[in-house]
Image: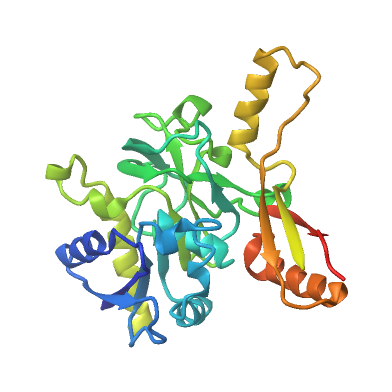
Length: 230
Length: 82
């Protein structure tokens, strides 16, 4: 199976994602944002970076890039779409995921390892992960503060996939690095085929990088691509 | 004509900049300040002299691009025109 890794002007994590997916046995190709076809891909990743300079709002311009039309059709057909960091922001702006991401609580760029707890395994990002498991992943963002209006928040139950936590899994404000609503680090759409997360699993696929906990998330995505081909 | 769009975070949503500035104002003794909200202001220079048409078009621009209806409210102000 093959993943399309979308590149916008300003995207900068695409090669990390391709490397990580290939190292886990999947095929992955870059797709430019002006392309109007996903060329038969079985899954889509929107990687991190600063698409279109993050001007206006993170993801606000990217959602109108030509490639987003086939991405939307792909998502609406129930096929797997994962947004990482800036890709998460783009999926929120596109309305494919609930809520949105704003500046971190302390108005500082955060670049460090964080712990997240698997809250649910109902998405293409988490289906191979055991709920309750704690993953150590790098967080690398200024606008990582997940927020949602009260009515949207009520609808998130069951769709929160990862929450920021302490080293042994305790969720508390003290372990929330960026002020995200209810400590949310990853959410999915109700169907679970579209998911977004702020930390970077593709940078945690080898102990040499300090953690290999990203593998279970990327393997979930890879496993989700298989039914799409049948 | 010039049209100004004021965009504000919807009530109840996280506004870290507003919270921080609010705290700073309190520290300076301005206890009457109950909340601070940060927004942004966008000025559009529009070719045309029909304010109603222009405002309707700008409203559409706000809904499609300039504001995120999930997180933001907007108001449209005509600054001058015929």
